[in-house]
Structure formats: structure tokens, C-alpha cells
Amino acid sequence: MDVYIKKMKFAVTGHTSGIGKELSNRFDIIGFSRSNGYDIAKDRKRIVEESKECDVFINNAQQCFHQTELLYELSRQFKGKIINIGSGAKDLTKPPRKMLSIKQYSVQKLALVHANDQLFEEGIDTCVLNLGFVDTPMVRRHNFKKFSTIEVVELIEWIIKSPHNKRDNSMAKISWNEKIKFLQLLCFIGGPLVLLLNFNVFYLLYSIIASWFIVHIGISVGMHRCFAHCSWKPKNKFIEIIIHFLSTINVVGSSITWVGTHRLHHETADTDNDPHKIAGQPFLVKLKYWFNFWPSHRVSPLLIKDLMEDPIHKFFHRNYFKILFSYMAILALIDINLFLYGFIVTTMFSLHTISWITVGAHIIGTKQNPTLDDSRNTFIMGLFMWGEGWHNNHHYKPTSYEFGQGWKQPDIGKHLIRIIAKPESLKAYSVIKR
Ligand SMILES: [Zn+2]
Ligand SMILES: [Zn+2]
Image: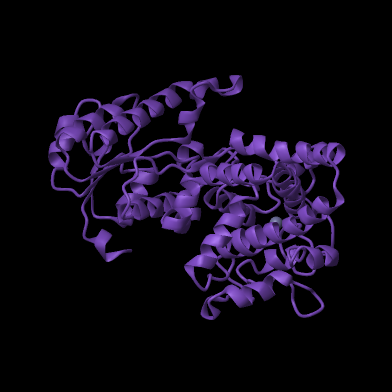
């Protein structure tokens, strides 16, 4: 554990089980639970008084709206950092019929989130952590993926150590942003329409070549090998920004969201928790996924904390649509055909190229390495898609910047990386999995 955290004093409500118990195993805590004579409904003032000297207050015990009321009480007197344990269930205030029993709990947790937001705006050092399901005795019998209490404690350590002050450290819910969906559909549908109504063979050739470079430098070399797997680092800031820009104009979302989904894909490939599980799906689902209609999913901030702390990733994430719409507007102002072919048709090709990997590379091809998933290698995709077709190799050794192994497995991407990377940053054939 970090020395800085080791010296801190923690106050924890509900310290005898679940997350609270894990915290009491790790930190020097003062615990407040019914078992040692505290009731957060009746003893709030006493709890706040007795935790006065602590550096961090973990507001963990859930009991009707009393967790929210305790937060208000803390905001008046407590001088340290307050971390509220919320719940992913706060999204279910209008639950589906079969989950009606969760409604009350959801409303109570949502009240906590709102109280936290209000107090944060007023300058209180408070944040909320809305997790999905955590492996506690309460939900142990359910058969869905859960966070371990150890992972939650690691997340709390990260929040305390991080220099930034965020009001919400929840698991990011990655659902398809409507603007991205609209732009993707514009390209998927608009591309064939442009070709039908305004055909020009010269422009078409330009689009194919432009897409070949934009998607492979932006997504394969940049977003995938550099940002998601950290297998190489750009030689200088100029190259880094170009890669960020090229990844942005492919219309697949910001690096922070794309990488979150992709790292989750590697952790859970071809299981029910894989955000775009392909194996065993009916044809229509495969077709839907080809056009990027995946179910929304949650990504832990721990999975993308390196990107969330990086100023360039944060800048491109916050200004994603400003950059994208400016790029589209500039193309249209120069020449409408530059917009129609240079953006719509080019991006249509790029999106289909990416789907060849997300969908095709887990169905078609050969399995060369003993991976637990269904990832495949395909020569033709390896050749034309800058090495991305060696997807089984990639799942076997995800942190390697080389996807093709040896000269018989062509990989244009790795040759470009050797030119634009800091040589000491190159990771080849590492067996450490991300
Ligand atoms: Zn990958
Ligand atoms: Zn894969």
C-alpha cells in the first residue's frame, strides 16, 4: 500500500461486512456499525463527532435515506475527504417489471448521488462511487459478474491518491451516444447513396486510399496498439496529436470510451460479459453488431485510469464533437465533394474495416495460439488490414506491438510503429496480458 495512504486515518460506516470489512482489513479505521453500538439513523451527530480527526470518511452503510442524511451532517463539520458508496442500481429508479423490488433501493441511492452533487458544487470535498454489483454476501447467490471487494478498495485508494477532484468516480456507463450513432448511420447509409447519386471513380479511389490510411493509423496503430495496449509510445507530441486526431475522425467515440470497451473485450473475450460477444450469436445479432449496435455496458474507471489522468486524452474526450464537427465543416466549406467522399464515403469504408475485426476476427480464420477465446488469424486481413487480421496472435499476446509473427505474417502497422515510436517504448511479444 502507498505510504501516503498508510498514514491516513479512516472512518467507515458498516465496517463489519462487505466493502467496509475489506477496508477495515487494509486501513487504520474507526468503524461505526450496529455491532459496536452505532446506528446511523440515530447516532449521526455522535459518529461525526468521533470521526473528527480522520482524514477520509467512507460513507458506506446503506439504511433507507440515512446515508444521505449522514452526508449532510458530515458536510457541516467533517474536514477530510468524504467518499460515498453509491450503487449502479441508481439507474433503475424506473426498473423493468421483474426488478420492481429494487426500486426503493435505487431511489435511496439516487438521493445520495444528488446530495453529493449539490455539496460538491458548494465546495465540499465529497465524491460518490457508483459501482455495479459487488461480491458481498447479499448478492453472492446471483450469477452475474461482480466486482471483488478488493477491487473496490483499490478504486478507493486510487481516488484518494489522484490529484484531481471529481464528484463522481462511478463506473462509466458506455452506452451508444446518439450523436455518434447518428454520424455512423450517416456514413453507413449516406456512403452508398453518394456512390449511387453522385458517382465519380476518381473520388472513389481517393476515399478507399484515404480510409486505408486513416483507419489503420488512427485505429490500428494509434487507438488500438498505442492507447489501448500501451505497446508503444510516440516519439514526440506532434505524432501523438496526429494519432489522436486520426482516431477521432473515424467516428468510433473518444479514446477513453473506445479503449474502455476494448480493454473490457480482452478481459472477457467471448464470455457473456464481452461487450461485443460474437461467438454463438444468431445472424441478426451479428449483423446488428456489424453496424455497431451493441448493448450498453459498464467499464470500471480502474480499467482506463491511465487515460483519465492524461491531459491529451482528456482534451480529445471533452472536445470530441467540436473537433469532429469542425473537421466536417472545413471539408464541406472547401468543396462539398470533399465532404461527401472525404468524410462520408471514407468513414463508411473505415467503419466496415473496423467491423471486420470486431465481428469477423472472432468467427473466420484459424486459431494458431491456445487462447481461451474464439479469436482467429486470417492472412488476407493481416495483409490488407495492417496486421489486424492476426487477431488470435493479438489476443494471445495483447501487449505486443507486433501482431504478425515473422515475415510470413505481414503486418504493415508494426513497420510504421518502428519509425514513429520511441525505440525504448516498444513492447514485443510480452506475455503479460492486459
Ligand atoms: Zn486489442
Ligand atoms: Zn478480439
